Amino acid sequence: RLLIDQDGADPARAHRDRSLTMSHSDHEFRLVVTGPAIDGIQWRALLRQAEQLEWERDWQTTVQIHRDLACAAVMPRSKAQRRYDAFCSLLMHIGGSTTGAGIAVTVDIVVDAQSLDRGIDALFGGRAQRPPAPTRRPGTARCHTFDGIFVDPCDAVRAALTGQVRSLLMGADGRVVAMTRARRLFTGAMRDAVIASASRCTHPGCLVASIDCQIDHTLPYSRGGPTSVDNAGPACRHHNNWRFTSGARIERRADGTWATYRMDGSRVAPPD
Image (cartoon, rainbow, N blue to C red; front, side, top):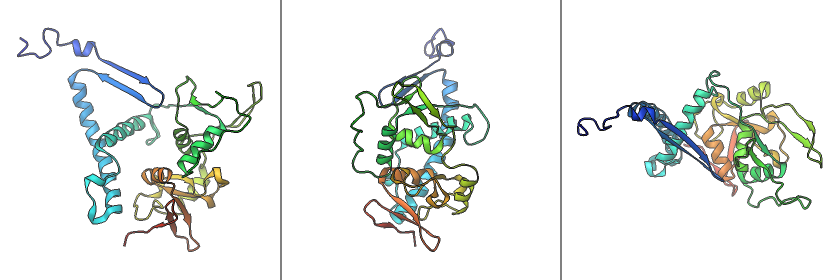
């Protein structure tokens, strides 16, 4: 019977014992899913479709950067990273972030100003970590969810760029003195004006339409850059992340064109 039915004498066991567990450590989480084969087959088919979209985005970026030398070995993400991002894209689609419908989800992150500053420094190319203020007591740094799950300050900054932000002013006794309303950094007419400033991503050679781009400060807020139309530009998700990790910056030139500069000051030239 085992040769005919690999599930043995209890074929319903996989359905009955289906499970999903999630655990968090200091900097990461682990998701373990166990279930019947039919569900895995359906998941795999759906994930393959999403993986193909991620691969095409990677390949387009690779060709733009490496031209005739483009190959799988120089693609910006590994196969495992693309699969993870594809899975996240499927969840975000269900959550309604791209469709305007679906399950409404709110994630709250509590972060103190100094931790947020260090995250901004790291993402925007700051070489030296911002030192803690002399009056800061040990153990007062905060960057976590309401239920205590630690979040890296860099990830908190990324969340602030795409989510909503509100400020809390707390007194010495820990009581909330004042609180602002939740809002996006670039919203409404201001966001529309920034999108209208360029038809594509501002990275040289990138063809992603500005309507599908993220909006960010050209001069970082931590360096005195205002949240204004004159200090913002559209960038696709990939090149916005690349700017964060590489310390690159963009600026709008006097002739209305956009220029991208690496951390060392050299300009990223557009393709011929």
